[in-house]
Length: 238
View 1 (cartoon, one colour):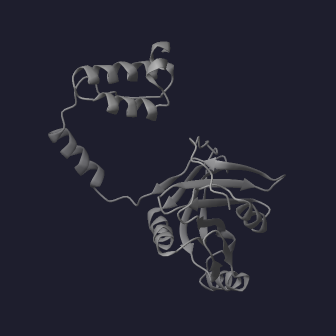
View 2 (cartoon, helix red, strand yellow):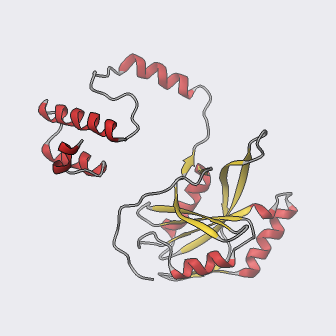
């Protein structure tokens, strides 16, 4: 497995919301930290379907399951017999094993990308419909991939996804009340931002104003511009 140089990523919208429940994600991070190199697991995925259009609007990974496997610094090989054992166990509990639609694995301390071994594993998990794949590393980098197998095989190598945190009753209301009581926002704080040209122009003005007031150092301003994908020379073009 080659160690690729870190490059700026541009995740794309897959057209459906993709989420991983917080407890499942925590299990993956724990296994990632425990492993000396790579480690992999399989995840259950729920489909959220719009009642009117009957279209899938969200894919939610609800849990991850570890199976017996042989791992090294740069490879992970799941035991097929133990995968079959997991399928049988799920079915005995009334859980549809066809929901095993996510393969997640860690690259240990290496970069997150789709290696040749990853491509082979994904091909072996093809189910005729769709599959989610997630690769992470010990630095908490992560990339989600969506493969579609019908009517032909196509995939998005880096899709937008998020961790789904369980709602806590009354938390939003309590936080809102405390925020309104304790936080005073200055006029320069932006309200809504779409990050189009006009919005970037507004951001530029806000950052320059903040620097003039001494709220940002030159290094901090450069960091903000870098996060926006701009440099000082480009500011005058907006």
